[in-house]
Length: 189
Image (cartoon, rainbow, N blue to C red):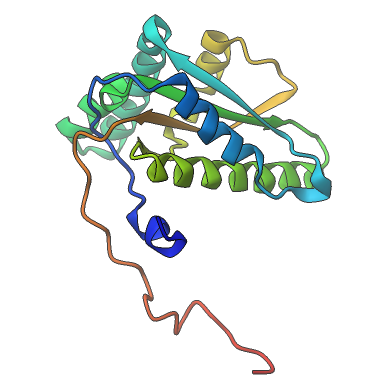
């Protein structure tokens, strides 16, 4: 697929088929993530690929987060709770980590570099006909995630994504400032 078409085709998928994802495809996706640019070429990312029974406690954690947020905001979205309760039925969840650091410049570099890896991950998945949903909401229960997945304190959780074959693909959402008149300043052009 042509790159610009691929970028425009990527969606946040929240409903997946039960069809399993081949380990070889997951490795291709993670290889693409591993080729992301990084500050000082540190390549600070790591990935936890979760499937099977361990998905249940992850989903229970995310569901509790969503219900709490909805309770506090006095809104309720039954479909979003259903999505959270089992990550939309995705057969795989990938948790993306980076090295933790007390130094703000190192932390920022690690987060930015790992976000580049995450972008490669979601684009590679799209290219293989798979869906993802880049999420930080599950991090509202970070202590529980760390416990479930045995994540050491020297790692920072950057994002979580379900991975699977889309059962439903949302329509593209309009871009804010689609013609880039407010988001771009041209200097010296």
